[in-house]
Image 1 (spheres, one colour):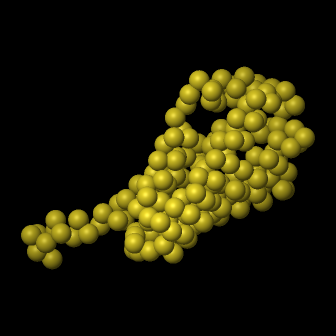
Image 2 (image 1 turned 120 degrees about the vertical axis):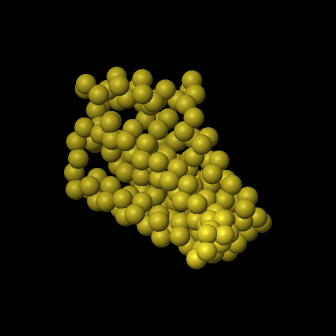
Image 3 (image 1 turned 90 degrees about the vertical axis):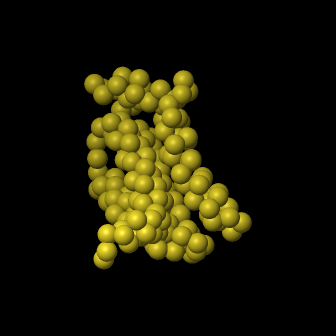
Length: 174
């Protein structure tokens, strides 16, 4: 390949770069949520381990769905497969949290109920936003993809109503 062709080849990679960056930040969002969630978990059992394994399975599929999105950026089907993958990650993560905190089965009984509610809302918000994004893809694929970009950013910005670490740190020594 002549050097003069390189800029054109690099420009042709933009869908892959966007798909990679999008997926990196979404997986990062879920990784942070997973880390925060497991700070509160004190015990484990087989069900929690299988739920965690299901979570990891859907995370591992992200490069495949991201490649599909990059290869067919104008396809509602590729946006749908990608969105379904992200939704499944979030639903399994949410189910894992619900199982762990249900009846304080695997968490400290002293875990602040406000913190439990806060994290519950945060964990279900992303999959619900992705459902909205899937519906939006029937109108505009690009608006749908933009929502995938914006939502993790909005849900990761701490506010005075989301003091994760103050709640987590208080319960690390339980």
